[in-house]
Each structure stands twice: as structure tokens, then as C-alpha cells.
Length: 379
Image (cartoon, rainbow, N blue to C red):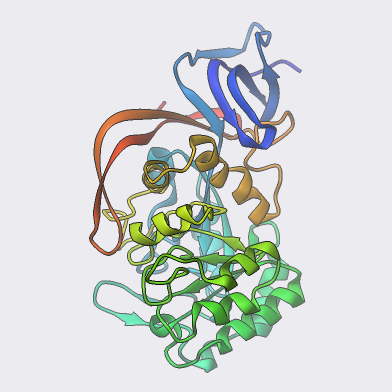
């Protein structure tokens, strides 16, 4: 196969292959067509010299809200992905079975960046989330739509990767785990994983974890008190370690109110890094404190995670959560997505969702995006 594009002499960090070193990666036909040193260029091959740059598999943001124009919290996926190095944006429950058709036709199919989705079990998805209106879509049992959710998930398996539910005081009021019970039935009926949002109690962190299955995702896993995964003394709650041991996936899901430096430090001190790092970017946090995926990755890097582990949490680990192993890797034959990164040194101000500021000595920046085997941004 003649390579269409070669990225030459990059530091390639690909945790899926346990590779961190200088190499070339090539693309053709929308796929990875070569990986190694001194890949041959044909007469029509475009070659980009990447010495000094870091190239990773295309970043996957496992928690976003990109139903732009269809919900009040939606952002523009392409604008976000271009500047943040994301090649796959996973929308988590913006749409439910009642409005997913519009999300697919007007956003997913028109977007250049890849969009996958967790379908909300609530009929209208997250419909009441803005600066002035906050209505928990899981508060009213009449909005739970398990039959419709199964039908829509079955009809859209190419883009729907799981089922989403939000529980907690703000999302489900006094309903406790009832919405989660319904969502789990939908997930079991369709054979899909579930992503569960948790905010303030009820229900408790432990009650939610007890119900999650291997491969299900708990997002906002490093959230602050109340409903934090650690005690006031920084000890890890036993249910947290038990859940990981049985295969529950712990996702950052930064967002507007769901990430705490204090909790993150305690989790890392307990040897409990996140499985996946995601931004939960939406209209109320894109201008801070979350900003984007690379900023969230930078925070975890500055808190002590190894760079390779941070990249794994936004590539191969996210692909495992999605059950789509052609994502998040630069193995030959995989999707032709890659991200060019730089790690800058200096003094950088970061904020969590509780107003704590941290000065970090490194910042991960997106320098380029390869999408479907073509250089996408910046042109």
C-alpha cells in the first residue's frame, strides 16, 4: 500500500502498543498504514517532519455534550475538537430516545469530527440545564423511557455506544437509585455498557457503585464532598476499590461541578488513578473551569500522573470503555486518527470546580489533528 501521509520522526506515545519512542506513522485510505522507522514515501505521499513533537492516537473525550442547537448545554463539536486535539467526542446523554433522531441528522452526520453517543434513558435527554433553568431530567419517573430507549439504541448501533443515566439530588431529586435501575434494564436488554452520573446524595456513592456491572462507567468519579470517593481523612472508601476489582470504570468527567483537586490528590495517594480522563465539556464550563480535554489531562499530569498514563486514559482506556478497539491506537489497520501534542514547561494556573487554584509546572497543548488519515487542523 502506498502511504498517503507520513508523520516523520515524532516521539510516538501509543500506550496500546506500549510504545514511547521516535518513529514514523503513516496513513492511507482513512486508516493507519504503517508504523516504524524510515517508512518509504511514494511519489504522491505527503510527508510532515515532526521532530520534537509528540504524536499519540487520536484523543477520545469520553464525556462531552455536543448536541449544539438541540440542547442548551451543547457546544459545537468541530470547533471544540479542532483546538483541543480530540478526534472522537462521546456525547453522554444530551439526547434521549425522543430527540436522538434530530441529534443524529443535524449534528452527528454533519460533523467532521467523530461523534459517538451514550443514549439517555430519559425521553428528552438533558433538556433543562442552563444558567437560569436547572430541572433534573431523572426527577420525574414519567420521563423514563426504557422501551423507546431500547428501540432507538438498536436502530443506531453504529453510533450509540451505551446508555446514560444521571442520579443524585440535582439530577434525580428524591428518586434515589430508581432511574439507575431502569437504565440498567435498558443496558442489559441491549447488551450495552452504562455510564452513570453521580452528584450529591441521594443516592450515596456506595449505593451507585454496588449496582454497576463490569464495563459500566462511573463518571464524576473524583467529585468533591458530599458523595466523594474518599473520607475526610483521605482514606479510600472500600466500595471504590471493590468496584474497580470487578471491572467498573472510573471516569473523571470534570465539568462545572464534579472535579476536586483535594479528592484527586487523595485518590492518587491511595494508588487509585482514573481509568479514563474526560472533560464533560458543555456551555457552562467550556470557558472554565474545565475548558477542554487537554486542560483536564494537564491537571492530572501536574497532580502526579505519568504522561504515558495520562495519554492512555484518553486513548486506549477510553476505547476499552467504548468496546471499540480500533479507536485509541496507532496499530496498522486502526482508524487513521492521531493527535499532535506538546508539553510546555512553566507556571500555569489551574482551577478545580470548588474554586481551588493550583500552580502546575506543565501544560499539555494540542498542536495538530489527523482525522480519517488526513491532516485536519491546523491546515
